[in-house]
Amino acid sequence: MQSLLISTTAVAIAEIGDKTQLLSLILAAKYRRPLPICLGILIATLLNHALAAGLGALLAAWLTPEILKWIVAISFLAIGLWTLIPDTIDDEALPAKRDAGVLLVTISAFFLAEMGDKTQVATVVLAAQYSPLWQVIVGTTLGMLLANVPVVWLGARFADRLPLRAARITAALLFIALAAWIALR
Image (cartoon, rainbow, N blue to C red; front, side, top):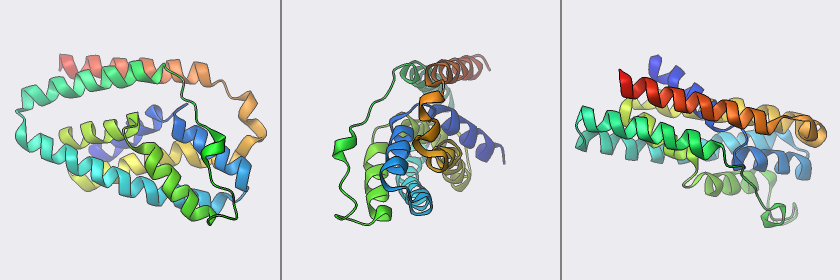
């Protein structure tokens, strides 16, 4: 259960102000169909994070626990610093509603946006450190949903009122503290 909780928390924090959270907002504002957007986020995240967790499990099998500990600590530090950099996404890159269903647009856009993203990197790192693997995948997916579903449902209505800079700084500090905690234990 610890793996599930850590994975959920880590990804929910990493996702604050991330480009996929911005993508959620853009999809909600553009299509105004929260249910297929949320389902698309779920499907894309499960696929993407299952692949990332599989890679993390392979790395764990090849590395010693001491090396893995330092990789995890350095990765969390890097994710913390990366979180300080605001993400942007191009609204024009999304296809028009008539070109594809909202669900397919969301699945493809989210899956591609997650490639190489800090939450995908976090999933690789978490899967290398924690088991069972299914708890990491479910946890990272829940973290992604916790961060994005409210954005979809609230849509663009409150976007200008969210203090994203403060949230990003807080998330970065949490990751840096987590990196220090892992390095010192």
